[in-house]
Length: 103
Image (cartoon, rainbow, N blue to C red):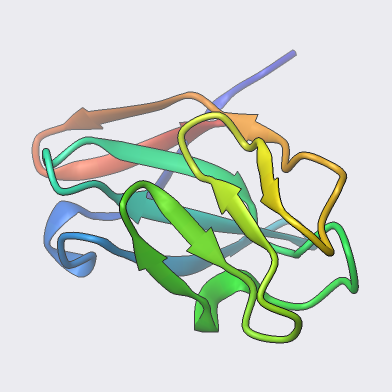
């Protein structure tokens, strides 16, 4: 059964950036869009299993730091080769200045 997990404070993430969040042996990436919306995906690239936390975030996308594959972090869609497998996404909500993800 999915559960909501308190992941971070909203102030922990700058606009058009992300942070890494590790929970129960899994890695997630939490993003803050230019519109101040929050999104969450798996934190590892589907191509070479590299942490996305060091990737470039711009225009609702994250670029993998290893081979420059690009994902839309809102949907998880793989947008540029070499990535071809989408990222899993997770619902987010903000409560009292804290970002929660449903996992």
